[in-house]
Amino acid sequence: MEIQKEKTFVIIKQDGVQRSLIGEIISRIEKTGLKLIAMKFAYATEDQCWTHYNKDDVWFESKGQITVKNREAMGLPVEKPAIEYGKDIMRGNIKYMTSGPLVMMVWQGNKAVGVVKKIVGGTEPLTSDVGTIRGDFTLDSYELANMDGRAVRNLIHCSDMVEEAEREIKIWFSENEIMKYRLVSEEILYDVNLDGIKE
Image (cartoon, rainbow, N blue to C red; front, side):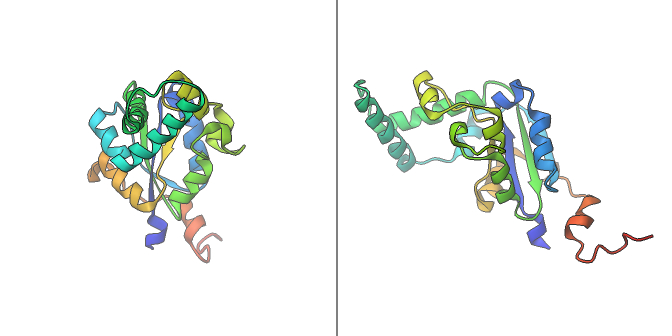
């Protein structure tokens, strides 16, 4: 069934790699029963990152307006248009994403996008729930990242929607890099009657 073949895309970012959390992160996702169907350890290019983040001028302007308001509230000068502050956010993300190797993965299974989002936790580590990857393994915040002029270090990226996952997977993987195979544990997860268990 197609519902059992939903795909999601995950990146373990620089802080996850540098803190040796690759195995822990993979293990948490794997334990749900989702099937790993593609994985690579590679450097990202700037072009891949700009395409991946897929932001437009409306997004840049809205994020930039928040930065402008924050600067005004702190008595700091506003030195450029809001849209440029918004682009600075993405420039910071891309600088970080291209600073070292990343682990890119595709996971497959029932409600893969929602299951991984739940495990990963909210975007800001400070407000992520205990028990999530971000909530348990990092303590960064938007405030600290903004003060340091850098991207928030939240360990991992995951797709928010099925359509987004489909678009992102094509950026990072070719069709022949995605494995098609049967996982024995799928019988436990998807076989309605658990046929063939008894000897």
